Length: 130
Image (cartoon, rainbow, N blue to C red; front, side, top):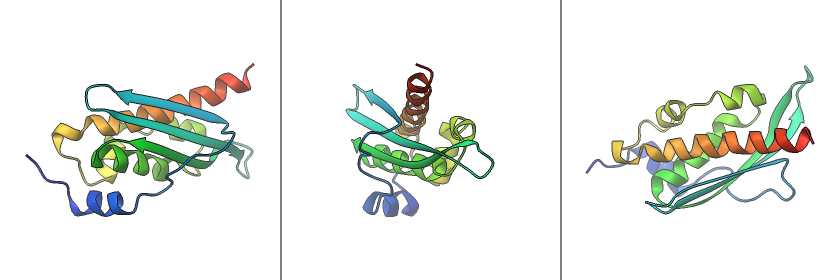
């Protein structure tokens, strides 16, 4: 079995943007019943100087393995401050590469993180359009 690299282990020991946002503008939840990983992504949306909607704040609450926790933490770091359009374009490969590559058997965790982010943005847009 492949081992986790130093970057993944360091982020696991000190994950970023963990927790919940009260009254989030968008909330995305994903889970993998097979491995038991569950991710909740909370976003607050603001505007940048150009008037574009950006992810002003983002938090994640994750239950699961090292790869799930580090992938969800990394996706928050990649998305914070980005426009919604830029954040939606974050791929599982972006998450995996930013982590310095997860073991292949854990690659699905980067997919979960990306999916939770996209669901939070979709949730925000659906609330806004009501």
